[in-house]
Image 1: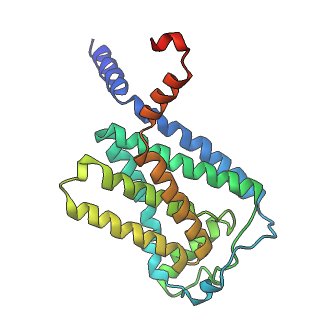
Image 2: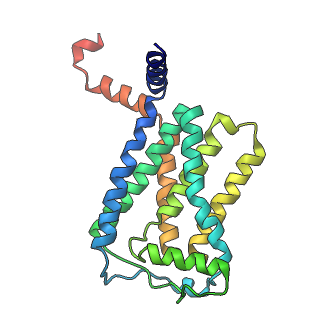
Image 3: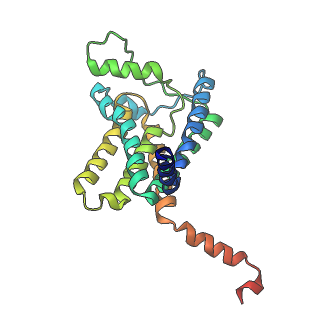
Length: 233
């Protein structure tokens, strides 16, 4: 009897949170990305701007770079449990950006030649963390930057969600962390300024598509315009 109650409660919870099944696309995308990482090991197109030479390597920025993982996870968790509509928009934003990025990586294999020569014996603690990132992540598949795209998507969700409407410090903190994450990709030499610029442009375009267009209204208008003449009487 108790087992039935537990099963029923789990089933009820899943029924109320069906939108969480959107997360199932992520492992599919991640497998696709890993295949691209293995495929694009020997690239001939290197993306770099002369402006990159003026951006110093600052190992301390590895902190916001790593915080990105928790930022994205927290954004999905909080909106997934508390704000269904924003969660769906966040997932759509993330998946559009990540999918477009993978398509670009597939058709235009490329990399960036900016990494500093680090070793596992660096005296600076933060440099050792950067070295660990370098060791586990190839310098390919960079433009547009997924770090930038996903950080922007989470920040837009935070700013739009009613959960944070009366929490100005949290919204300001999200803005600040978003900026630091974007800067971190350049300061630890994981991305060129070109990668970041493309991420900002694509992220801004996705925001306009997801948050400023009423797709239900567009769909209803399209249905009415395509409906047979007699149904409009």
